[in-house]
Length: 529
Image 1 (cartoon, rainbow, N blue to C red):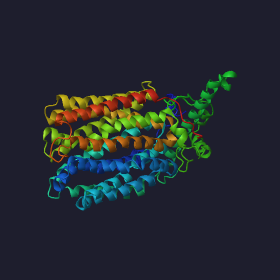
Image 2 (image 1 turned 60 degrees about the vertical axis):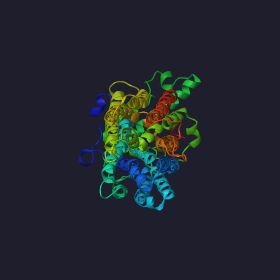
Image 3 (image 1 turned 135 degrees about the horizontal axis):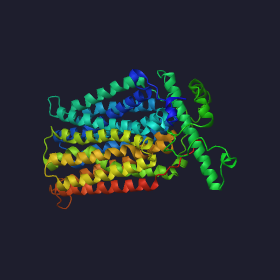
Image 4 (image 1 turned 135 degrees about the vertical axis):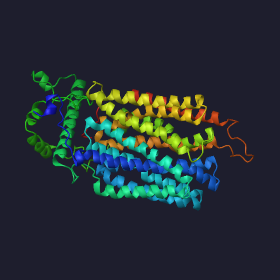
């Protein structure tokens, strides 16, 4: 018996690859780098817009239009990207998106001189390319990462996203006041995207079955984990059908042993192997060959060519709507902060433009770091503390969402200076890091075979408040819209405006997390559909 089984764990020891790190984590690392660059390319405008507005005399409404234009493109491609990535693999979808967003990043440096319309069009193009990024990486997770590692995986790639903001904001702040000027921001990040694309073409792979550089033992281990999950899911569905008819299983009627797999997605990676699987584990080589020979390609998570996405069946599931609604609500605060936080420090506290990037980046560092830690805590809570995966998802989503909303309100009401505001917002963003293992990871629990598509549904829904909210914030903050140069919002000062903005964001966080807790369940989506 293998060492892991002697401790009651059904999984074989994870094999190591290059320099002791499994290949699946290298794939995850490269996908995370791609997301990091994509987030850097969208985040750098939050700083650059200050200098662009001064050079071309854009008011707050026009700035809001430029910032919001990104979401016009971003809302159009996630569902298409998720469907293509689930069916044909995430490598090429992600690579194509990267080339598109890199091109439009570089063009931004030229578009400002062509006029406002061109700036809007270039930002739309950037959104079109970036819309496929997250769904593609989630498809890679579904193909490469077994259930026992998915919380860490989702937290890791999400943390990389925030690392993009960590790099972009201070770098952009430094460049915007340098002799190179704000245009150098977009040339630099465009070059980064092009370099990553070249490496991804060589190193990237959509699944273990198509990866030419994957060690055979790791390929076999991943396929074993996928087969264990499939059989556990199959037994779960059979048990539910029998329970609905008031019948018991054949094994129980004949006085046989209990079923091999517990029908709970929260424990399938940690239960001891029984029956035929247990006999096979006496000979690991035989087990590996059996899995390679018998795992049906039509149902394997690693298979590149999958059946058409069951749109209707998925949209009828409450679990899918739990993701859609929570992503919709959570994205308002995220995108408003991503686009307007530097302006908040500039207008509200008078922070110098060369320093606003540093004030904005500290909360992102805290969020990414805590999210990465949360990934390990989530997997440990299931494996060692006896928590259900669903409990981890619910608690993490509620804690992270409501926590950030409350601290945003505290920042406006209590902070008297920029440093105090940054500290309060940083604490809130750190707490928000737990959402990385909440709704963002939930699709891998109940429907990993369509994870990219399901995430794209939530991602698309989340783009709507980004598109509308980012523009409306600019409209609300614009003090010079009318001909007389008066205030557009009934005499409200900056403090009242930001108080209103963060109150609205806090309400969305509370509503979204409540809906997720209510609608999320342990039920699996049938793998045969």
